[in-house]
Length: 84
Image (cartoon, rainbow, N blue to C red):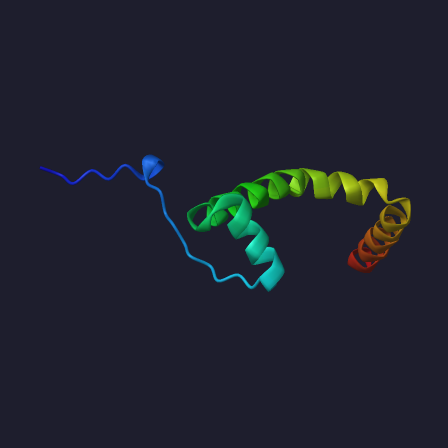
């Protein structure tokens, strides 16, 4: 009988080491308790990462007219070099 592994429902956990100031840790500990700090920080990071995904970064870059102008000049120069 073949071994079947369900990779879509497997949860991998990593334990990064974070350095926080003592007063921040005391605040976390008082508000959430020791076992809930990790969950809080993970949820906070997930929210932040959703807001700063690649689509958001691309929109911000295209809104920067100076950057877009510089990129257009670079592309034109690169096309000129390729034609030579």
